[in-house]
Amino acid sequence: MTGTTLPGTDALRERALAALGAAGVTPQYGEGLTARTPITGEVLFDLHATTASEADEAIAAAAGAFRTWRTTPAPARGDLVRRLGELLRAHRSELADLVTIEAGKIRSEALGEIQEMIDICDFAVGLSRQLYGRTIASERPGHRLAESWHPLGVAGVISAFNFPAAVWSWNTALALVCGDTVVWKPSEATPLISSACSGLLDRAAQDVGAPREVHRLLLAGREVGEQLVGDSRVALISATGSTRMGREVGPRVAARFGRSLLELGGNNASIVTPSADLELALSGIVFAAAGTAGQRCTTLRRLIVHRDIADEVVERLVVAYRKLPIGDPFAEGTLVGPLITAEAAERMRDALNRAEAEGGKVLVGGGRRLAEDAPSAAYAEPAIVRMPEQTAVVRAETFAPILYVLTYRDFDEAIALNNAVPQGLSSSVFTGDQQEAERFLAADGSDCGISNVNIGTSGAEIGGAFGGEKETGGGRESGSDAWRSYMRRATNTVNYSSRLTLAQNVSFL
Ligand code: NAD
View 1 (cartoon, rainbow, N blue to C red):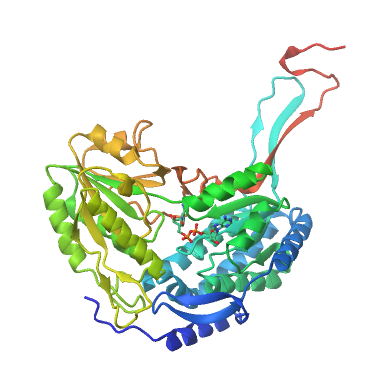
View 2: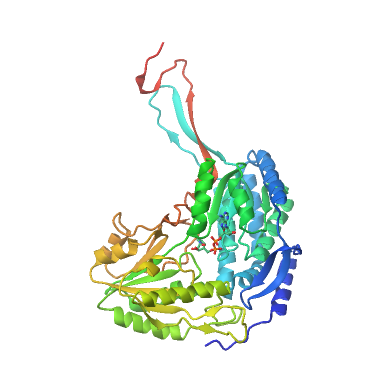
């Protein structure tokens, strides 16, 4: 089931250097930040961490570049993103290598992440000619009422380890065509892929003659993130990460009347009804729950199954889980790679212990693999836990592959369970019954930002707006009209008559 031996840290270091070199980037060696790989759990490089004064200069540079970038025609801004998309296409394989080395994603998921970046670049290029405002019927004769959308300012992007490249691109491709400049503080766990992405954007800027300062990278820990959050030159903070982080960031941005876009933790559920196509449901469930080693914000964490089919569903899932190939994410056939750190594995163990204390039964998984080959790495067996009810541990997000199984009697109860958690990111129903499907999507159905039918909770396309409600933060990124978060709206009333008519028929003078 594991089979493969893991690559050594030296080989991974070489592979990382080759990928960075292809992107035209040399690591800035120094102190303050370590690049590690979860594949062995060992250190790859010691890097220079951006200092507070360097961060200050970077924000000043981005604020300076905004003054010219905001009046560069939007289609010309789109040209920069078009060039970035070309470079991402050309370096797809090396960039995916870096995602695997730093985040531990299996090859096809790492390639999928780069594909997402390419897709959002295509989307943003089209958008650069479609930043539409509305013309509104004026109540006054000889008046035109309209809205215009203008660039907002510097967008500060803070990103999490688990989508180390795609989240940046969702924000950056849109922000750049919207006329904003970007300062990026990636996760401290993923400095290499961030450097490669930033390097390619620098090259794209040079190729199309855009100012290099439209994008600045801050490779540092949380303190520099806090600095970005507190800086009033930064008009928008788009922050992706844990709800804990959002609780700190949101109020600080609000206190200075900045704008924030928060993409925080999820605790996603799928409902399986008696009319579901079980074959389809089972493959959707296994990918959503065990894929990416349970480290997606949209990972399936709660399965709400009708009690008449629960035993069959659980039995079949346990069989599938026992066969999951766990190990080297570069190896062909591996489906589950490592957790990001040993601490993440500890949190998984704690959650399983708590689940048992709260009446749960671990049906499969929870063990550690490859401990001898890589003592510093954290390869965990995805777990399924049958729970008597939705207890405290089930209502919290543990960022690891644990699937809690709950049962329901009627569909209202299933929807109530789906909604009875603090988070509101993704949800789905597996059903052959149209009434149930529509009910799930209705106003009194799932309360999540993403609600799916006959598909799992993870793996969104870039065309739709991405984000969730409640403790997930309320932000929307990526497709649809998410671009509006990166612009400011001005309402314009133009009087082209020779009389001054007041609104609401007010008379004065
Ligand atoms: P994290 O919250 O530990 O860190 C995320 C980022 O925030 C990092 O860059 C970190 O340095 C920075 N940060 C942390 N505290 C900060 C502060 N007080 N001020 C400024 N910056 C701060 O999250 P993580 O472990 O990297 O990622 C996993 C979490 O992210 C999970 O909860 C997952 O659900 C969530 N996530 C959400 C989405 C989404 O779109 N909703 C997407 C990916 C990940």
